[in-house]
Image (cartoon, rainbow, N blue to C red):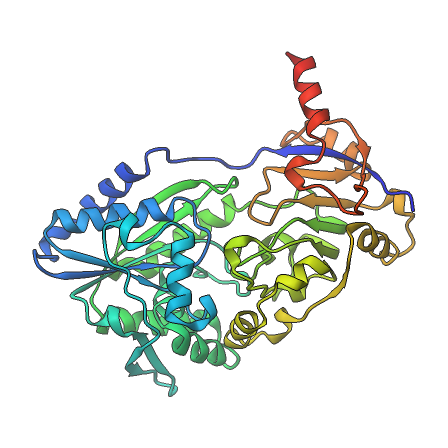
Length: 428
């Protein structure tokens, strides 16, 4: 089969960026005058989630330092629902993978799957909260604000969601996702968020926004009473900054890696378009090549792909993947797709399945993952359109989509390196 030639483009994405993370965190916290409520000798629980958030360890450490400066005793609690296999040890390991340990943070990490029921909603749903965090004098909620991978609304993924799914632990995540089958996500997140803030000692939140290049773009400390209103504005800004594929109609999307550190759904539906409502782009076939190391075998989201490699499937931790999918009430997201030994086999089969178009003319995009979209490989079917776009920079000439002697593509970041280096030298 003759594959189309590929060329590399660089996207001009929205890119406000904070360079001095610790100073910004301190300035934001200072604005809230935390010393008026957090007293010397009191305990402060700081939530830390399982997403691959830019500079998360630095943010958490700075918050802990600020609490110690007040004379308080900070500690860190994993806030990640069923991730890490739904065990206290597994969740401690997830944080360690992000560099968040007692040694690096200068504060204890206290991990437990125990929860306390803090109330019941008017429609009979129990509300749970991390037991260890509930015993603290104060709780600081930390999370990135971004579009949710499954739901659409004014409030999606952020501080409010962290209070119910993250700090609700496995027990809370299970019951809330089950309730979403009968009630909207918007209703659940508002009702539970209100009860948590009324009954738990939530001091304030630190909301993080990222730009299109996966860099910290904004840090906002938010009083607990203002979570809901402030998060609406942050959510709108986050959606505007969210990275996207450069073209809306794609026959085959090749993804080098997926994982929980990339997106809650492994593959971000806000990028590939497979969400509860039909939103661009329209990606006909997805081929995912590998799992990230930090996902620890959790391949939830693999069910969105039509094709995968044998090497990816062999790495799947079925227990953690299934627990995550069952907890989220989306069992199909853990279904294992067709898989084959080599990339060449998969690409040939995929291109035979895209309809009445010759393989050489197919529309292919190739990315590292759905979080890193600064550069994208595109087949020459997109070349003329790319030339007309001010937001796209063509950084390589078309060259063959070549696989190695082992039948596999190189890593995305390695593909065409010689061509790009030669062109850079020529430009100089």
